[in-house]
Amino acid sequence: MNRIAIVLLLVTSCVQEPNDPIARVIAAAYPDGATCAAFELDGGDVVVREVHGAGDCGGDPETAPVRDRFRVLASGDVERYDIASDAYVPLE
Image 1: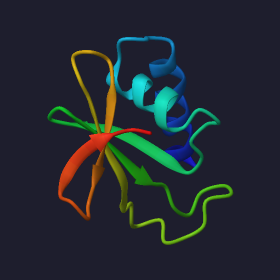
Image 2: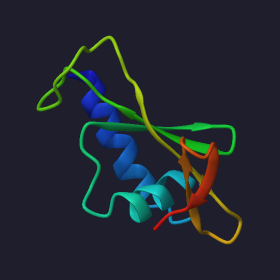
Image 3: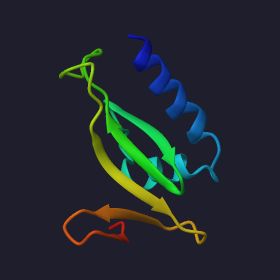
């Protein structure tokens, strides 16, 4: 239960700061909201992890697999990591 509160607090606080890279990713990639997701910065990347075992989020609570990786460019554009091409591509 503590994990959900932390994720919701993180998402809420980031959305209020438009220059925050996590807020940019949420706005660009998850405009309808990101459920069962946690966001973290890894160098210049934003990593999206699945949240398991809390509330409506099923799965093993001991795991948090990476769901997506994004990069926010200086222009403000957001790119998504494409595992098939091993490169960041523009978010469509």
